[in-house]
Image (cartoon, rainbow, N blue to C red; front, side, top):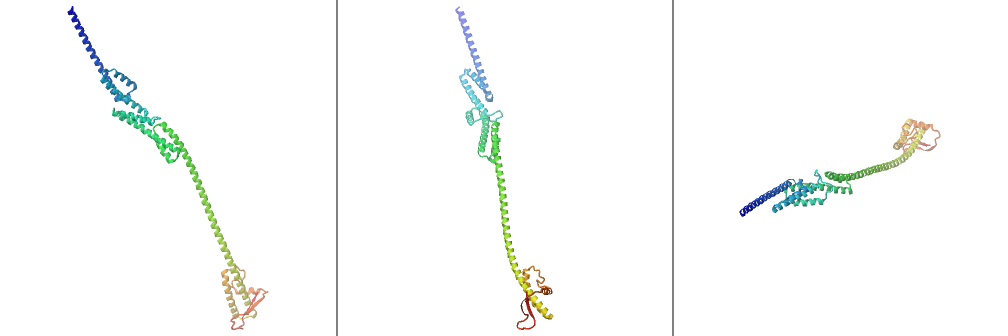
Length: 355
């Protein structure tokens, strides 16, 4: 019996030891499979962080926690934490852009600075991922700065509307890719443009009015100058005319006096010649003497050029002059004398003055 018992105990022991080994082996195999599964999952996440989700991260974390190898467990957990950090950075940066990589509404400088800080923390984890995320963040920063510049320019333009500033502001607004922000600033630009155009219209109207006023003033000044010049010329002409008239009148009087004296002398000569029936020689002498006196008077008369109706004025036709004197009856003797050389009196030639 004892022998049987011993045999039975050995068989049981062998069976127990063999079962334990098989269980341990199976457990080891299962552990290896779990580790490989986690490693493969983490590797796929590294290749495409965009596919990561919070649920996937939590699922992998649960699988790691089931691992029995503590060293491997810590190693995979750290890898998962890095992936989780990358995931959060990716989510944060991509949340600042839409599907067309246009900055979203309301992005702040604080958000950008937080994204920068998170991105720096994973710089040593995955360089390829870092460069990709940095490129996206640079797009956000560039578009944010464009918006800030445009907003500042429009704000300044609203305070100081100027056409040159308007054009510069408009160029900045047109660079903005966010349509909502662009439209808001464009409306402000339109309002400022309207103000600028109104100011330009006022300035143009004012300039035209000023030009018209200057033209009127110039015309008035020219007219006044013309009138002043005409007045001076008229006054001078009147003065000259008066002076000339006065001089002419004076000369005319002198001429008339000379003509009268000449006429009287001629009349006296004609009377004397007629009454005594002097010879033609004496008449010529008398005429010659009278002509000399008439010549002197004629010179004076030619200067003044008087307008006389007397037929004998000018002393050109002595026959007519004599006839004219003979036709006048009532002559009064005023004076008489001899004609010729006073040192040889009694040559028979005399003169008489009648009126």
